[in-house]
Amino acid sequence: MKLKTFIILFLLPLLFSCNNHTHPKSGASYKDSVLAKYLRFAESSSTIDTTDTNYKTLKGYIKNDTSFFTNLDSELESYIKIDEMSKVRDSCIRQPTLPSLGVDEAYRFNYHKSFCPYTTDVTISIKGDSINFHFILYQQDWATTCKIINEYDKKLTIQNWNEIQNALTRADFWGLKKYNGYSGLDGDGLTVTGYRKGMYNNRDEYHLVYRWSVNRTALIDPFIVALKFSGDKQGCMTSR
Image 1 (cartoon, rainbow, N blue to C red):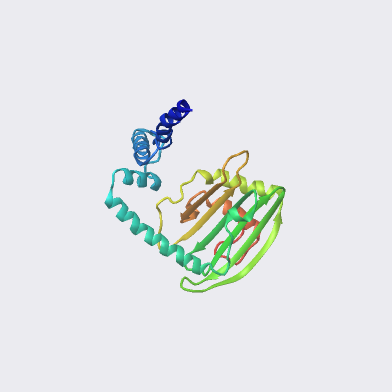
Image 2: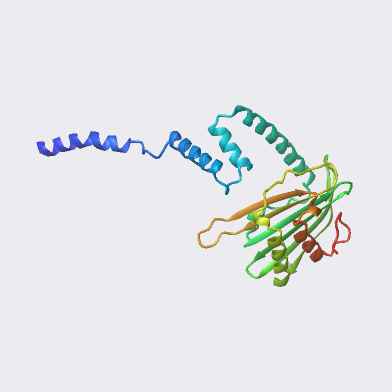
């Protein structure tokens, strides 16, 4: 009995020590060292985009760059205001997010043009072999109001789906940056969002691309295809 007691008393401190021992690859210092290692690799590699905001944010964090975060905070405030204005402007369409549609894959096009009162919003989605086309044309007031001019659903064929897919592939939609740095007071703008449900243990994918003066880019092509399916003749850009 005494031997068992001795063994238990001897082992308890060791067990306690093991349970409270910090793993050498955990904690803030380890995370910081990995981030620093990544930044060193990125700076010497030609395969990583060092102009990307995510990269710049990591670098600012590791370097404790107060100036960078001050500028980032200012940019975020601008983005938040624009997002709030967008929610008010688009309040009448109340579009669900693409991941919430419960489909296998979906794409949404939102097009606006200076000095034109209309905005076109098109969502194309597929679930199994069913392909849905949702069209909205609405009139907007940047301040407070939003009025639907036309809205409907229609079914598309697999040939239609393949046509939009081919146009998106040619435009390299999934490989494009979210923003390319170009903007202006006049002209037009197109936002394209895409969603793909994960398969075979892969994660779902979501991507957004905005282009100002979109007619100068290949991203206009899939939108032209979408407009062709709509037959719309009233929006700022109509079907051809």
